[in-house]
Image (cartoon, rainbow, N blue to C red; front, top):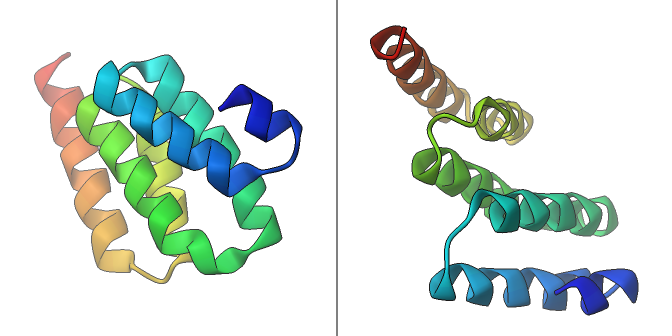
Length: 100
């Protein structure tokens, strides 16, 4: 994925990072995937829904990573999906309360 990212082939990089997640899921790979989605989004805003879904999946897999929640909420609002943003925010707050 890194090679594709360096060459500006962001969609191919996204595909490679998604494959990597099927082999071994990690916060680092999900963070990098979201970074590449941001670069791809800057080229083509039509991928916003996929970008939102990737952020939501990252938050679901790593509930202790607040950056994933913030990204998922922000992107959901940007996508006009206020219900989804509220749902994610509510889940995040419940997680925080239970882990205090």
